[in-house]
Image (cartoon, rainbow, N blue to C red):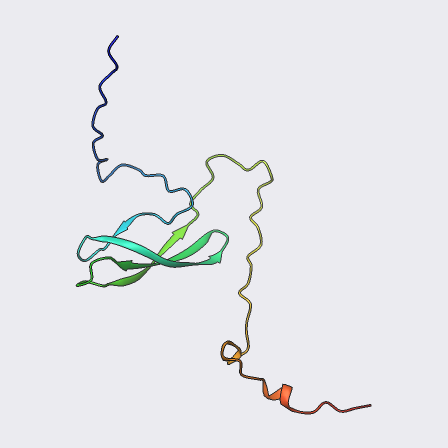
Length: 112
């Protein structure tokens, strides 16, 4: 019996739904059409995230923010129907990134 000849895989049409496991959705630049790279993302709430994109075309170089939001439930969670609480961003005092001391750290504390 002869083994079946492998068929060359055809590229998927552009309008086919693609599943992205653990990665940001693939996006093309709205100006030049080249592939865009996700630079970072920020979770605003548990159901809304901002994605920061940059065009891979050096001549274009456009950067933009896209949003990713929760639409609807297809299958309910076995853990309940409540969304987790948002994690607020931790506020750091200005200058802490550079090792700068707070003025209140410089003032001697009263004894007694």
